[in-house]
Image (tube, rainbow, N blue to C red; front, top):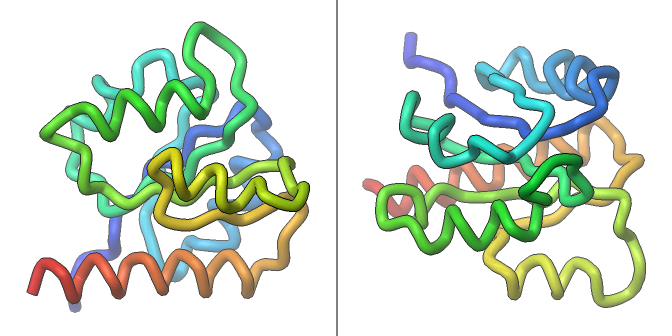
Length: 130
């Protein structure tokens, strides 16, 4: 049996963290953090296959700052990022993709929608690495 992909989810709402864990528990192992202030340290501690990133975060580093830090760091710049955010206006998806995210999902979302996006990104990553 192959090992499940590892996902880092940065989200300040603990209820949303638990919901994501329930949604994805069959397909991935999820680690969570309530802030992005230590994002590079978290990424250095474990080999993550994907980052789910809330954009509106408390602390010194919000989601947009976290994207910039990750993409500037040679060690992590190729880890796929899915923006998970309440920003759902026309143009927001394009803005986050331009910033360096691989995909975008707006809250609230359906379980199947999240699973499909996660599987899509993980399959693309696997194809690139093969």
